[in-house]
Length: 127
Length: 282
Image (cartoon, each protein chain N blue to C red):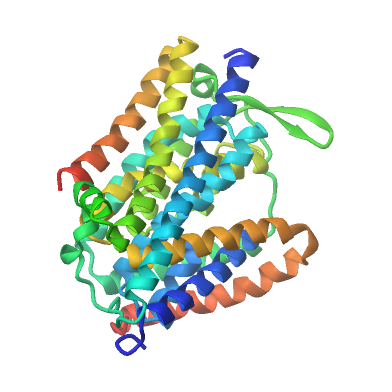
């Protein structure tokens, strides 16, 4: 990989990571403040695990909740943006290796990207 | 303490605790995730499955934030990171599926053991591993060698024992997926002790890899309801704020002394976890 491509790949990877974290934190903070205003006086229950009752465990449900302006779904959207950030970073690396026509690393990056998408699509999108 | 506490009070307690965990995590190099989980489970009575879900998300935030700077400065080796991420993502998936079938007490016990190892790792004298063999041909084939900036100018390095490093990374990924932590200490061991990379490059590349490793198990965690937004958000924001602050103050604090103090505290918490996991009190 020549120095210029390497430099520009570093630049884009760094930018994607920074942007994703800041966006996720901003959405999470907004949702969090709204959640405390709406539900701050309710009791908490994190000592018993009721995972399957969590409506925000599927991506589609999170989007529905955001459109309905539900505070917990807005916070969860922040988490989804954060989880998507490394995936976007891998995708940007893939573009860099494609541009450089580096076959070996295109294949390596594709394996990682497909594993990530498989986990997220298989788990959190289809359910 | 759960039950009578309101969401507002609980959220503020979690938020402040997470800031402290992020601060200590960045000073010691342990990472915030490995510190927040025991605090949530032992002191705030949170079920460990919610704790590791929240911790996993916070780990993506801190490592991505740190990696943005390391990548920009050319310290992270993108090729080594991408190649080893094959191992960590597959390991992470295996770990996350195991987490679904292992009961909470066993998770607490394993967490305690990993934490004990991490505490030991922070205080043990660091020896820059000397390369005494020619570079690994597989590493040359994959063009893994690189250059990084040191105060004495650019320094180039070669890569050794790629297969052994790859195997260790699979293990690091599995622990990350099982316990919802970045397992940065294991990643650094794989790179600096096994593959003989410079310590700075190992740390920077480890941070670069942690986000992708964690994202691989995040799909499994999300779909099983481990990621509860009400707990995850204050943890994520707190750990992020704490670790950014920690990195900023690092040069002005007696880091070596703090590391020793925190290593003792961490070891005590680890033993507490092991005991409570075995007794079934968690």
